Image (cartoon, rainbow, N blue to C red; front, top):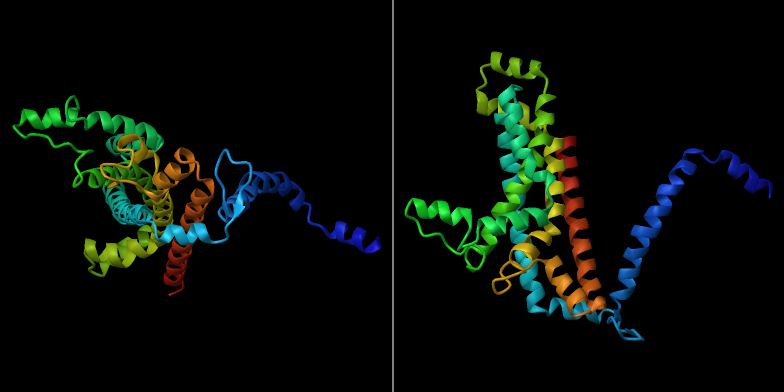
Amino acid sequence: MITATRALRRLNPAYLYLLPSLTLIAVFIAEPIAGSGWMSLHDWTIGEETHRWIGLDNYVELFGDERFRNALTVTWLYTAVVVVGQVGLGFALALWLRRTTWLTKVLRSAFFFPTVASFAVVGVVWKFLLDPQVGLVNGWLGRIGIVGPTWLTDTRLALPTVMAIGIWKGAGFSMIVLLAALQDVPRELIEASTLDGAGRWQQLRAVVLPAVRPALLFTVVIATVTSLQLFDLVYVMTSGGPLFHTESIVAYLYQRGFVEFRMGYASAIAWVLFLMILAVSLLQLRIGGRDDDD
């Protein structure tokens, strides 16, 4: 009893302030994660009274599922292109709009505006704009004598179109983060490199990039995590078509879990995606941290 009392006295009061947040995390995040892991080990179908234990059978079936492998390929292709495009375009915009004037303020707001809208809203707007019959994009192309393609139903164009919209949607976020990092680069370093005869490209490589590396790492990690969870955009614009050419992992999870009601199988997909995101994020952070140590 005395030992317990002494332990309570030594307890940092800060933990009491964290208790409400930790409780919410346990109830709404930790418990559902553990529950989905348990479901993934069962033949868990909505509507059935009993759920048979099957161990790792869902995972074994998953990696023999051709449609899942297709969704995996689509997701990784989308992620690779969108992360490079989004961060690269955001960095270019940040360099261009680095000086603060009334014009750059307007342009910053214009480029950042798509970030505020949800993926679902962006998908609805672009689906209308790219409509082959009434869309404004094909209408403008027709005025200059070009027959507009069927952007979202052509197997060759559907995924690149979704990628381009993903880059357009996220570039503003990368721009704002990198712009803040660029404005914190000490002017003394720029001036010293100029006096040493360094050109703009040399300054960019030797001074600017090392200074903004933490911000670049942050934008890459956020863009990667967001891209791997691609769902809203393809659900609204293509529903995974044509012929599953835009079906992402989360879209396939939705199909299995909430259309076919195979919640155990969908939970296995969710756990594979979770482990993918965790592994990629840790790898990116490790590489970025190693560069910082060097």
